[in-house]
Image 1 (tube, rainbow, N blue to C red):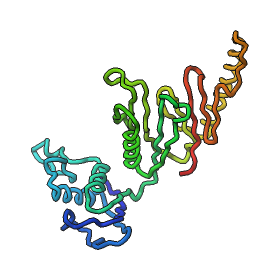
Image 2 (image 1 turned 45 degrees about the vertical axis):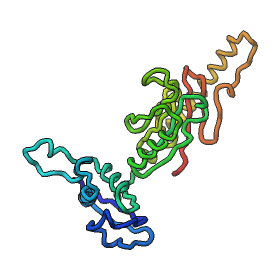
Image 3 (image 1 turned 60 degrees about the vertical axis):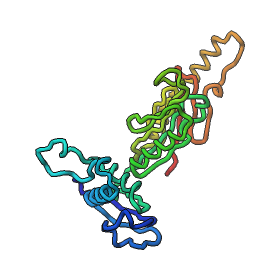
Image 4 (image 1 turned 180 degrees about the horizontal axis):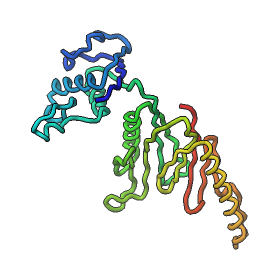
Length: 265
């Protein structure tokens, strides 16, 4: 069991029916937001009390670790992921709660991608940053389910949605909401639009990629104009759409690229 501590923020008290007997005496009749500090063990014990009060013993696994017994199945039947425990408390408790790990300094970014109609302007337009992976994953799931999709499914650290199913499990277009751990070195993101791939870029990496794209544009213009049988002159504007937070490059080496410079969140 870890020694991590968590801040429990109580915004609103609903009623005491389900929480009677649970040790939250310092927030009885609370007004406004109040806080407590709890260890992982205390959160698990609270969740287990709530699970039993709600009569969920046959529905969800135990939230507290069992002592070793000869019953191997029983020993393994408890929720090991503390994030699942926290999510249960936040969703099922009679308090309006937010539970945050105190020691965490990590940030997680949710990046949206789309390779269907209008994708030249619809990649990286719904970027959000969170202070926990759990919140980021919940947001990714929520936003994926809000799209007009035929199917949504979890894939690694994120969610995929498919549109225009033409045979079972195959779709005309795909979009994603992907979650990445973020640190202070990340300056921008790059999206390979055709295949919904995302890369986190430092400033140096971003500048190198942009330099390479501009070189590719010059080569494409030269090749297109040399082989032009319709007397149509190509220019840089045919290959790039500029925006204040990043450029969209199209028709380069059979792929299209969207870059977004990250602002401070």
